[in-house]
Length: 373
Length: 165
Image 1 (tube, rainbow over the protein chains, first blue to last red):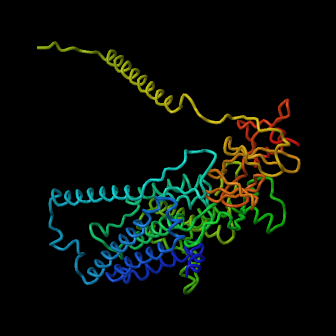
Image 2: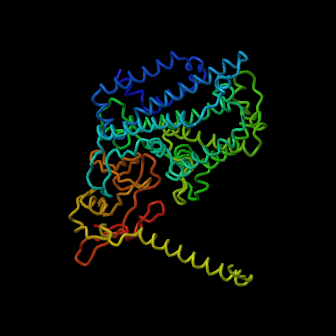
């Protein structure tokens, strides 16, 4: 069982499993959003952690950096909040199908109460409990006292604080300018832009899933899969030399991992055409430039307009224009920002799979200008 | 009853200019103090150039003796001696030399380099940088970290980037 997990937690498998699991979570959301499933989820997570910590290798690797401990709360809290929001949303959706108002709109719930004392007391207790928890944590898990900083030496693996491990994992697949500056900046800008892009007035003041499906699914995919799962990969599945290690695998710094990466220009000119790289860098990178332009220019057109006319299931996917209906409701400015943000966030899984499957390093590679995509 | 003072348009603008200039000067002075504060009086950093020893002191391959002091690997191969920077070209971590695998491997994002500094795995976009090396009058190798040579700019053929031994 442990060997099985060590093999299949390799990101190329586990990321795929998580994506499939996410798809099923959305498809069978009514099963997910039942009380039984919620309790089962919490117990299942607890049992998983207990079983993991019974393994000495896992425990040792996990505690190499003390700040990994919050990951445990993170997993619980995220599982809980996601489940709770879906539970409340589906409950309201069922009520609305029966013609009832959402639970938050019933007369007894519309009654107003004073912020003082009702809200402030709750906040006070939350603050006290939080402080007690932090003090207890500081007493039981002491901060490590390490040797003085040395600019010519780095620990192996050099792991960021746990909340940045997703970003660190992202940096494996991109140039630092993209994964360290542009994409994190876009995450912040995109989160700020959400209320301006999302014009759907439904769900104001009450939980719902079905009335806001696109918004919820897009957000949850980025949050659960692209952010939190990457944090878990960075915490549990990465060891010395930032190579992949299974959660129950001993960290051996001499593990041989073949990671020879090639650029798309080398694939085109050397491997396919069998000639030397052209000296003009724009001709050298032509394949990557065309692919990038196609992704950023042609794909949005394809997503907006129905272009082909296939019949049946093929047509559903390849005719294009699935997002076209949002163009009308959002207007072109909001719609183009939405498309841009969606495409930019999808670059991450695309680049990850290209790296895992065909060892692709960079699509456009111009170190002469420090411009690598 | 206080006497009501009047001020004409010209005087108002003089006052305004004096006020703004004073404010700008004060703010600028404050900013320059803060800027100065960012640069310490004494920096305990290793010197940017150092005497590495005679070329015969080094065996063929990667030598780590100056890595922890100056952040430089000396690499000798095929009659050439070069000084490799120990800063990863991806995001500036410090790679580890793995003698068994004969490669440098960065612990942060897994970039890998051959012993000569050429990148071959992981996300590093370009090879490790090389520092200027030359021989002094007594035949000792001087490594000068203020001058770097980058492979992708074709600078590794520059005569200052290596010593023929």
